[in-house]
Amino acid sequence: MVTLCLQNFEIPKIWELENLGIVDPTERKATKLLENETLAHFQETVTKIDNRYEVALPWLAGHPPVYDMYDVAESRLLSVTKRLLKENIFEAYDDVLRQWQRDGVIETIPEDEISNPGHYLPHRPVIKPSSATTKVCPVFDASFKRPGYASLNECLSVGPSLSEQIPPLLLRFRTGAIGVIADIKQAFLQLSVRPEDRDFCCGGMSKIDRNENSLDIVESSLG
Image (cartoon, rainbow, N blue to C red; front, side, top):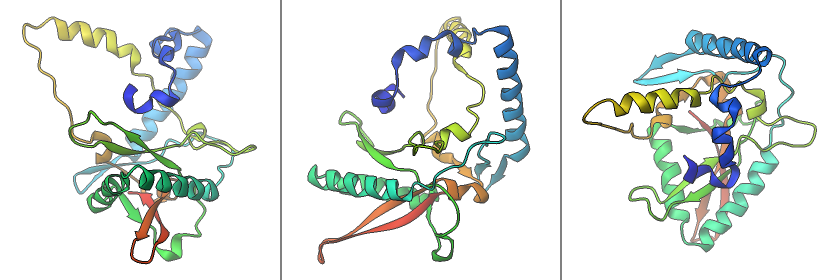
């Protein structure tokens, strides 16, 4: 997690008191109320469709307007594509997006829905030379915002912090004589966003025709 987010993440925040569940009682009460509402919303809206869990975005009540960000996402995509081509890793980056498309993680937006109100997420590559599987991975930026508008992240509830559960979890793990760990392959990609929220999780894919030396953008959304 730290490897993916190192450029935009402050390591000391991991052990801040708020993230460990140590906060002012009054603030804690308000936070707990919001956390309970977020969990209740999740439990009421989560469904299982075709072996994938479909979830709704946890919108905050009365959240500020969200800028569509199409111009920003388009500009970022063009600059990212040029960088990927220059570093000869465009094919690897594009392969990941195409695989997501085949797996139903992202989908092409129908022509008659492109003008729908929504929000575009810029994305950039995170390069992991030491990885044995995926050496380059797209990471979407839901924190970027225009002046006078909120970012997508600021319009959503973050839910309860799980950091305070780590110490007792580690202690219980150490009580046994043998420890066994496992990882769920691409766990986050097993979640699907409900259709009415997908317009706020849009992005773009570069389509390059090397024979004609052209570059087009294909709009897509997270499935």
